Length: 59
Image 1 (tube, rainbow, N blue to C red):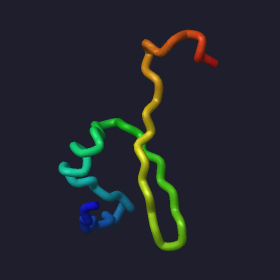
Image 2 (cartoon, rainbow, N blue to C red):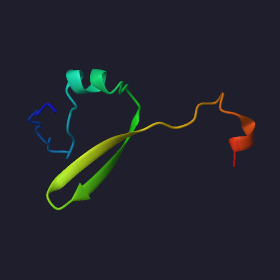
Image 3 (cartoon, rainbow, N blue to C red):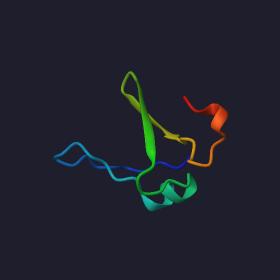
Image 4 (cartoon, rainbow, N blue to C red):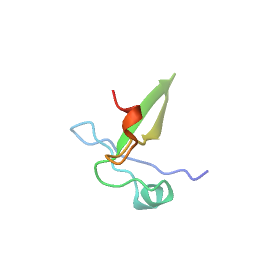
């Protein structure tokens, strides 16, 4: 596991380093889920179905 120090901007934003984005295949516009546990923040990638997803899974 790599450790990186991130800085929170005045707008409350952080930037994910390129090395992390490449490792996890995170692209512009991708969604992440944020979990908290005590003083820990965890981010998980959220992969949504694409337009080509089978129709029988539609709502």
